[in-house]
Length: 68
Image 1 (tube, helix red, strand yellow):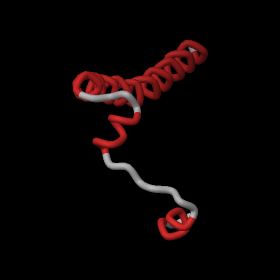
Image 2 (tube, rainbow, N blue to C red):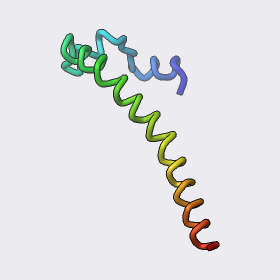
Image 3 (cartoon, rainbow, N blue to C red):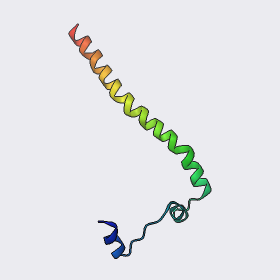
Image 4 (cartoon, rainbow, N blue to C red):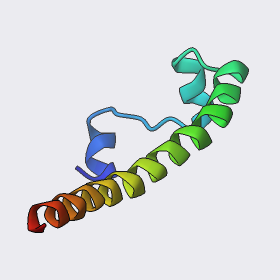
C-alpha cells in the first residue's frame, strides 16, 4: 500500500521521538542502541565473511585428504 491508502485507513506515521515514547524508550534505550548496534553490526559482518571462508577451507582440506 502506498502512503495515501494508509492515510485513508487512519494509519499515521511516527517519527523517532514518538516511537521511543510509545515503546517505552527514552535516553537509556537510545544509549543502549548506540552501544549495541555497532557491536551487532560488527558480529554480523564477521560471521557473514568468516563462515563461508571456513566452509570452503574445510571442503578443500577434505578434498585434499580424500585425494591422498
